[in-house]
Length: 292
Image 1 (cartoon, rainbow, N blue to C red):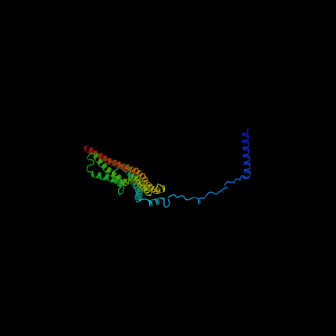
Image 2 (cartoon, rainbow, N blue to C red):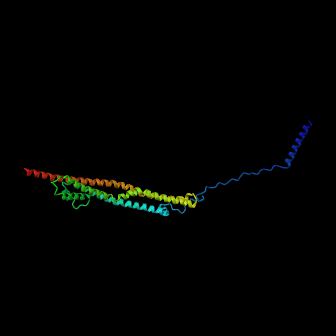
Image 3 (cartoon, rainbow, N blue to C red):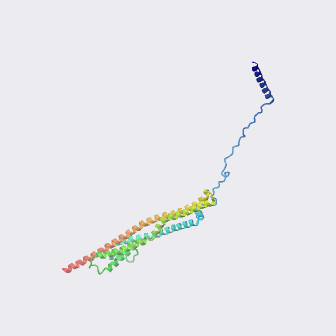
């Protein structure tokens, strides 16, 4: 009981000490630490934005600028492909005029041959005229004149074969002459893309060499060189696509022209066969009257 009272007395003494200490040391008011309000700023304009370095400064990425900045090999490839395009255009204009004139003359000759009753009539109608039709009629006339001593005395099949042979050789020569420039178009159309690809490979190779020398993988270092290299491929396609289209169109036109010449030759052969049959008929009639 005595220990309990002593403990209670100690507790009261501690409480009194705390109360007296609080009276001599008042609590310090805490300061307001609320951060000041930040004023609202207007959004940054385009002028205030920081400049971003792209690495393309000083590079003209227009087609002409890329051509001037390209390697000498790539430039040579592009100049060659451009020259091939010019040659393709010249062949297209010249061959179009040549084919249109040749077809017009062949059509006129075919009409005259179909209207003629004999080879002599066709030769008279087409005398002094230019073109393959007139040349075919003249060749048949010359062969008939060369075989004049045989007409009516031998089998006419030999004369017909010789006339057909001369006409056939003239047709072949005319077809070879009218197709003379088509090989250039075929070459440009087939080789042009590969030449452009060679320029592209060369340009990309130089671009990677530039990466190795600068020891950086920044796209700005390699992008202009790759763009210049790809321009060579574009030149190759520009040269090849028109060449292929024009070649196909001319191939069809030449085939039609050859068929037209074949029709003219067939008409002349019919005239020759008709003339030979008339001579044979007259010879048989004269022989029969002599026998009577």
